[in-house]
Amino acid sequence: MTGSHRYPVLDLSAFLVGSWSLHRTILSPEGERRGEFTGSASFTPAGEVLTYREQGTLRLGGYRGSAFRQLRYQPTGPGRAEVYFDYGDFFHELDLREGYWNTSHPCRDDLYRGEFEVLDADTWWQCWEVVGPTKNHTLRTEFRRGEPGGRDT
Image 1 (tube, rainbow, N blue to C red):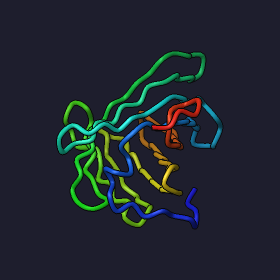
Image 2: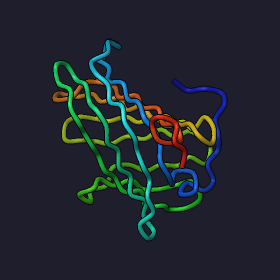
Image 3: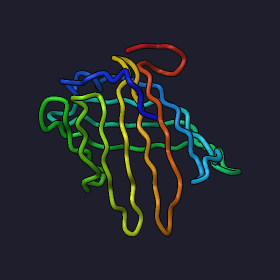
C-alpha cells in the first residue's frame, strides 16, 4: 500500500487535531472482503495528550451496528507519539516525521503489524495485519480531514 508521495509530519498534534472521516475495510488473509467500518474520528487535546475517538457503523458478516473505539496519543517529540489503549496499556509507537511508519503490537498469542502513511495535509491511512491463533485478518483504514458529508473543521 505504500506510495511515493509521503508527506512528512513534524508537528503530530497540529496535524491530527480535529475531525476526520474514515473508512475501514476488513479483509480475510486471502484478501476477501469480510466487512467494513464507516464513520468519523476526532483527535481532541486534553492537556499533553490527544484523545482519539472513532464512531460509526460496523458491517461484519451478518452483523450491522454501531461501534466505537478510543485511544490516547502521548506526543514524545516532533512528529512522534506513544499510543495507549483507553484503559491505559501501551499499544505502539508512532513516528511520522518521514510520512511513513511501521510498528507492531503483540496481543497474547496474536501479532498486530501496523503500517502508516501520510499522503498530504488532509489524507493518511493505516493498515494492521493481524495473525495468530485467535485472529487472522487485515484492517485497512483511510482518513480524510473533515466530517463525513463534507463538513471540515
